[in-house]
Amino acid sequence: MKRLEEGESTWPSRKDVVACAAVCGTWREICKDIVPSPEFCGKITFPVSLKQPGPRDGVIQCFIKRDKSTLTYYLYLCLSTAVLSENGKFLLAAKRSRRTTYTEYIISVDPKNISRSSNGYIGKMR
Image 1 (cartoon, one colour):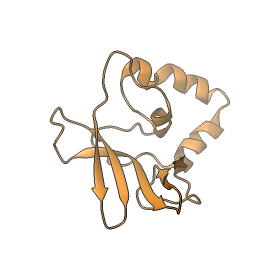
Image 2 (cartoon, rainbow, N blue to C red):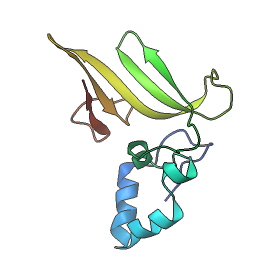
Image 3 (cartoon, helix red, strand yellow):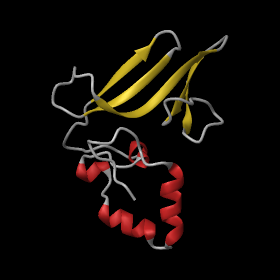
Image 4 (cartoon, helix red, strand yellow):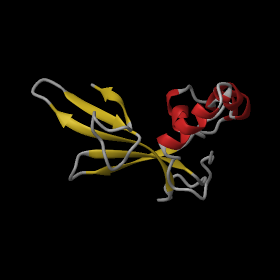
């Protein structure tokens, strides 16, 4: 399995991760030993890391890009110490949809297909 590194621009595909998990029943336990959670190592390694708590003693710097025409927001991980640098690793996308009484955001790990029916769908926020 490929680990997300600075040179790569996308996450490993979901089918590759699932295929690795299907090879061995102890795969998940091995991954827990090899790849610590962001709370302890301070790094985001896999997409599942986005749902786990961040480091207690440090900060993970990110920035948001907004596309006004499609009402979409993109969250990127800062790879350098300069927060205003335009290069970063894509983490999440959120698309705004207005209802009559509230506004909700659909959140996805796939920047091209932000919908409830996509494989990258994480959830919604009101």
